[in-house]
Amino acid sequence: DIQMTQSPSSLSASVGDRVTITCQASQDISNSLNWYQQKLGEAPKVLIYGSSNLETGVPSRFSGRGSGTDFTFTISSLQPEDIATYYCQQYGNLPLTFGGGTKVEMK
Amino acid sequence: EVQLLESGGGFVQPGGSLRLSCAASGFTFSKFVMSWVRQAPGKGLEWVSAVSGSGDKSYYADSLKGRFIISRDNSKNMVYLQMNSLRAGDTALYYCAKDSVVQGVMNHWGQGTLVTVSS
Image 1 (cartoon, rainbow over the protein chains, first blue to last red):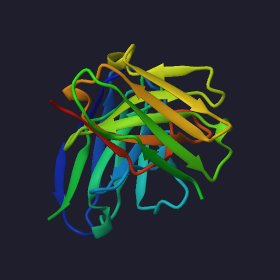
Image 2 (image 1 turned 180 degrees about the vertical axis):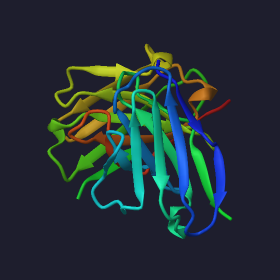
Image 3 (image 1 turned 30 degrees about the vertical axis):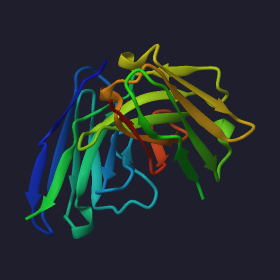
């Protein structure tokens, strides 16, 4: 199975801050990487697919990049509604696997 | 509008069985891969299983093979997860998810159904 190592596991930032989360795959997955947002008590929602493609309707302050084994997810200007846990997920190989999650809190 | 509604969760003793159901609407059901993803209380997401649009191919997390069976009924727009030999570690919220046109990208999720395995 491909292991997804996500960091940090949590972070605290202020409104307007730039937030970056990293995800490392245990083997080459090309650009087969998604980012999900999960707010408390809600189902996950895909924000970025194929490493860098913004899902329809997702604000442009969210972005992703990377290929191979190293990926980053960025919120360019943190908003109060962005408080959530974020997960990376690879689909380069079955079984699909998720990172451990990053809990983003407001400072 | 895409809607996914899970049901069938509940309380079961170790060794017992449950069948989860997911009712889908708002899209051409037979064209899309459907998945189950679970989340243990306070923990992260774990992909469980997926089934092809036609239902002829199924995929499982390695740790679950032989205990869980995924199926679908395209005439009813339903996907199922038969869970056998349940263990305490299977306690989780089970989500039904629809893939996008890109297999492996889950772009719609239900609200989940809770399975509790305890004696």
